[in-house]
Length: 113
Length: 114
Image (cartoon, rainbow over all chains, first blue to last red; front, side, top):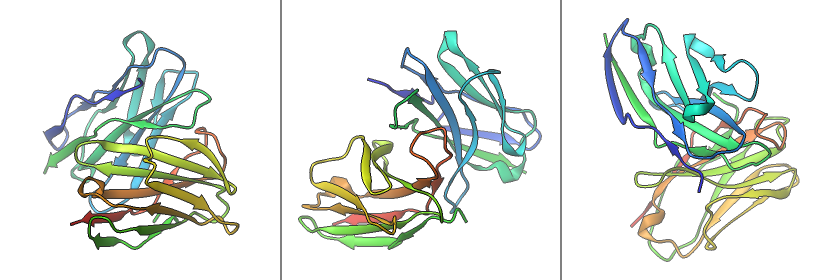
């Protein structure tokens, strides 16, 4: 069965530190990949998505993610985090042509000022 | 504000009961998706409707059902409720019926079954 793994459950960083959140998926076929963010008390929002083309995807608020097919990974990165990046981050995967979006369990990021 | 509204915000009910959760999509969006977020299962896709028709099904229990009405709002019906159904239920909407369209999430309905 298709699954998505986010190994970091809670990450605590100081402002200006660099961020990398891991995401691995188990499906061997063609996939579309997403990162969503949920700020405290707010709804889920799309940060970025990968469908095809350049495996390095730029998203909103300075986030980027790199799709590495050989590693089944889609890690999220940001060179310098801010206090306002404190949120929960969800990786999601969908098989190309399907409609079932599979989410990871989420990573809570706390940024200390 | 995503433009997706969900009512009620909170719902507390007893085991064995039935509840209805409502979702109004963003103006112009034809697809509605339902998700369940619980502590043990994480965020799981339940079902998708597109322009009134069921389009995809995920891990939705037989005790749960959904529909999308001609005005495109959707309702998720949960019956014979069990303690394990306590969760946050999200609705999302998108313009089209494929995942290439961005999904916009509502604030969720928190269901507590006692």
